[in-house]
Length: 398
Ligand SMILES: [Zn+2]
Ligand SMILES: [Zn+2]
Image 1 (cartoon, helix red, strand yellow):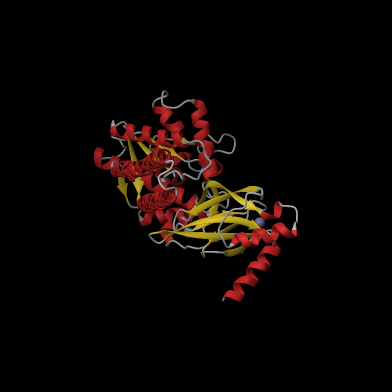
Image 2: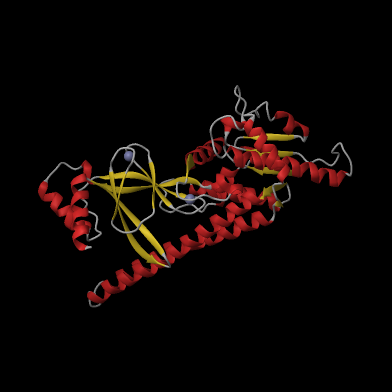
């Protein structure tokens, strides 16, 4: 049996349900990684150490998975009502075709709902099979001193180094305590081998070889026979090299890297122990209308403005891919400007105009209420003329 310790990003990645809007094609790999990990825990070949930081993170993700399920249910109900209205207005014509569409549509949504429901159960059963413990005040103050001394992993200016340092050092402390209890005395005769996994290669890896643990940390790991791996699939393959192909490992590593771009929420402030968990992940790209890409044509501008109030998209405008994300802690939605990469939260609803602080581009958010206190956002990029016109109209209404 081997102890496994996963860094915070790996946990967030695993616990997160895959966003259906995501343009990422690695969905099956994500679930495969999770399934293989669960298998290894269930057959007793590994035990995962989990502290309270990670447990808290899971509770957050569980909530957002549940919200997604409610979203699907509401969307299905809403769309079926529209279909019913269409059917009614056609006086029985095309009824076979419409029924076939209805059956297929229900199937698609039921598939999504069941996948997410299963994922909640699976992650929970994994967490329940982990060795749980709390980060002690000794580890916290040790890490605080370590950060002041700028020792690895506190090399760069990254905020989440603290979460990962706490995970590593608290796990080392836990393994030592457990070994002492099992062995009764030093040295640790009952010591089990362990593996620490962190994709944060610049902070944890050696400068000359990122696959090797940093020299500041090496003595702590070697004392308890702990190995270091840059990713979970690579660590699992170390235990059983039939699990993943080299190309699959590369794909997962790349996906985790893209998943976390080192952005932190501007809206929420988690309590001190969890301050590093308000990371934003941009898991999906959405196509938005970009009015500024269109050649100026006064007639069409007028048409666009008429349509803004109709919540309809005008196909004549070229679309543009914009990154859409969510804070892992408070669930606030974020947009990353396609022009300048600036991020901003969407905190208000309906017909709000946001100006990108980085480049001055205007984004209009059109929210649609989808029930149970939730909104679905439609986004478009608008010209400053449209912005002025919209603001003029809004001020006349109010
Ligand atoms: Zn937040
Ligand atoms: Zn911008």
